[in-house]
Length: 301
Image 1 (spheres, helix red, strand yellow):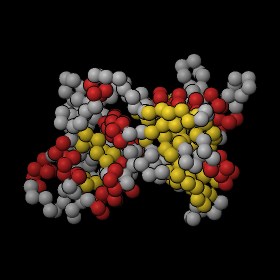
Image 2 (spheres, rainbow, N blue to C red; image 1 turned 90 degrees about the vertical axis):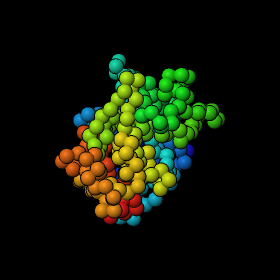
Image 3 (cartoon, one colour; image 1 turned 180 degrees about the vertical axis):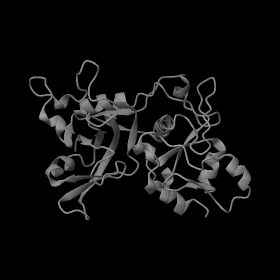
Image 4 (tube, helix red, strand yellow; image 1 turned 90 degrees about the horizontal axis):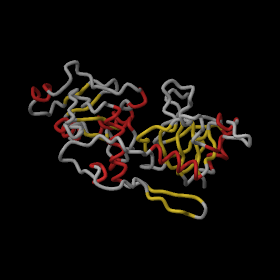
């Protein structure tokens, strides 16, 4: 087992779904297999416009031959392990020094390893990048009434991860409480703290966002903590979404159930154009895969 870096871009030609699978050619088979049972960091190349850099972690469960593409393989992600970084980490700091020291050669210059789509990652580099990526110093607080951890109010020290030394390397776990907190932060930021259905953005004087981060496919139904499986919703709208009174089409048209008992009130809460507000970045918009699940399993036709 060992840590790794997997390069992924939202316009990839590969059949990637970061929270579920990573497709790759046979040339990288050995490197990917060495990551099975351990954590990897996703990285978006610097040549991508508005790159996210190092943007998420996931745990590789197993590797299989791709049944749909000869000569290709799939690294399957352990369900529930994927997590977006609160703050994407650039390739290098302001001085130009890379955070991933393993890409440097003996002369201290960036080597060809930095171009590899899959590459091993030292425990030190992994810890450094994850700690930067999980910096929650600028959390937007949830609306009153949601569970709030003391650290979110600045009332105590923050400990988002539990690090344990194992032999000569580090391992870590991410609690559900921390996952919920990070998911809330990344989703609300993607939507600018605005309810996707009503378009309303309310932030009180203490920095509390009225909107909440909702999973489109719930965690209880194997929904991952990825922004494209999230949507920012205000309280009443969130309640309606979870109970299937509203849903979204793949092109983000707002759907209203015919079983709702007060259609006029529901329509008064919806954007006038009938289209949900969406993040600017395409990769953060609700994915059709999750929207289809919601329509088929939650939405009352």
